[in-house]
Length: 108
Image (cartoon, rainbow, N blue to C red; front, side, top):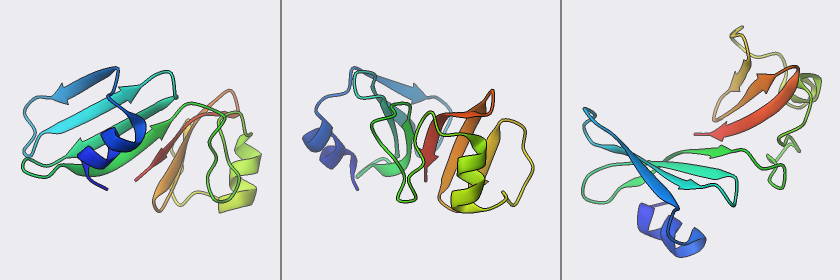
C-alpha cells in the first residue's frame, strides 16, 4: 500500500515524524485517536513498511490484540524463534509485551 492510499483510507495523520539520516526517508504517520502508527518509506512513491497498533479494537488474523496475554500469543503463533525480553516476534508480526500482556502489535 502506498502512503497516498493510507491518507485516503485513514485521513490526514495527526502528526508525521521524519527520521533524519535514512535513505530513503522514513516517515511515521500517527493516528492517536485510532491507536495506529503507519511507517512509510521511499522518495517518489512512499509505501507502507510497518504498522503499529495500540488499540484493542484491532486484532491479528489469529485473534491477538492489545491486552492479549503472552500465553495467548504463544498459543496462536508458537514459541518465538528468538528470546527477546518484552517482544514476541514472528515472520511479519510481532507483539510488544509489558507485564505479560500485549501492549502493542507491529505488522511488517
